[in-house]
Every structure is written in structure tokens, then in C-alpha cells.
Image (cartoon, rainbow, N blue to C red; front, side, top):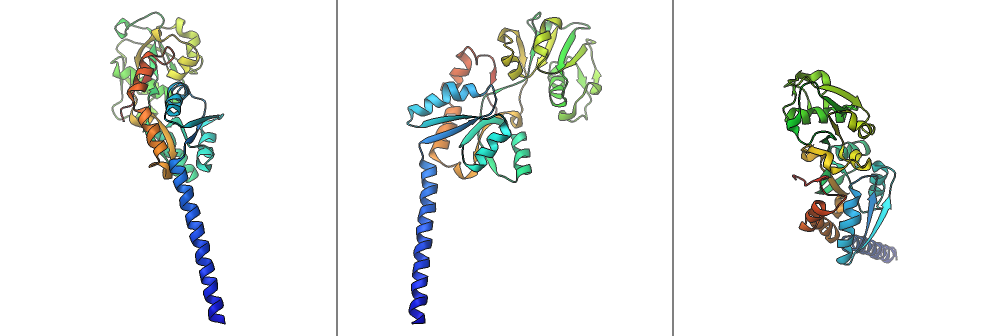
Length: 276
């Protein structure tokens, strides 16, 4: 009697496990083959790529694409971890590394995408060859963007920085040569567009320039982004091999997108194609 009861319990448990396993496998399969893609949109100028090109192209392939707005990138990442969205496209590797470490998650990049870099702008000059003695250069006053601005100026050979300085920690005190005796005005990035006509040149983030409607004709030289500062599509690791993820990746690497960023009136001259 006991043996029969024990055997019955084993069979019942096995059937339950089999059913659960089938349900789990079915859930994974559905997620890999699903035709609805939910995209998180934290505030970013790069959303134009999804809204104007990637979404319509995915819909041509038979997908339903739902766009969900978020007030911050961190909120969008939380939703991605929880599974309420499938991807976002507004962070670089340096940010993602910090997020994963702080939250003990393993979100991963799917593909690097065209990014808007910082750039040198001017209303009064049209080339870097117009640089001359004691001109005024406006640069952002926050540490990260100050460093990026000074590195860009060094690449233009307008200044020289200490050889042993770390790129992310560059300050005005690290200038060891200023052959044009340039004068620097440090300001909040958001203020720089307002005083563009009062200085000779200015360096500001590309997104700030775009939001402030600084004409692309005022852009002279763009920063060359390192791969760890290029924006990426980010997804959950378990979805890397899904068909929908492959289709998203293909579109962000496509000639259709290259044509869009070269010809679209709002995108033209703003984006840099990724190195990676």
C-alpha cells in the first residue's frame, strides 16, 4: 500500500515538473519569437532614430512597436530589468557598467548606435583656422564635459595638456601650453547656446545644441567619441539571441539609417556613426 502511494506521489510530482518545464520553455520561446517590441524612451535626442526610422522599419517586418516614455534613464533601466520593456537606446558602456555594478544586474549592449557628440561651435568663425591670439572660448563647467572640451582643444592643437593626466579628470590647471593665449569662460552647458554670439568659439554637448536650436551651420568640429562613450541599444542578456533583437540590431547598422542621419533635416550633421 505504502509502495503504491509512494509511486503515485512520484508520478504526480514528475507530471507537475514536466508541466512547469514545458510552461517555462514555452515562455522563453515566446519571448524569443514575439512580435511586439516595447521600447523605453528616456529623455534623449537619440529618440529620433527610433521614432522616425527604426520603428517604421520594424513595423514593415511585421512587428508592433510600443514606445514608453520615462523621466530618467535609470527608471528605464529598472523597467528593462523588471521586463516591462524590451530595450532602450540612451546609454553608453561607461554608464551601463556603473548601473550593473550598483544594482547587481547584467543588462548587456546589443549594438552601438549613431551618437551625438560634443562639438566646437561658432557664430562668427567658420573654420578652426580663424583661431588667433586671446580669443574667448566658452566651455562647460561640469568636470566631465570640461575634460572632454579640453581634450578636443588639444586635438585641434590649440592647447597642450599634461602628459600624465587622466582623460576623465582634465581641468584648466592641466594646460601646460596655450600658444594662442586663449581665454576660457566656464559655464553651465545649458547657458552656452545663449552666449554663443558673445564669444569666438564654444564647446557644448551636441544634445544641448540641438535642444537650443543652434544651427548646424554653427558646428565646426565634432568630438571623436571613444567606443565606451558611444550610445547603445541595451537589452536583457537572455534576449541576445532572439530574432527580434537581431532585427533591431540589423536596422541600427543598416544603410537605411546611414541615409537617414545624412539627409534628415533634424538629424543631418548631428550624429557620428559608431566605431564599434
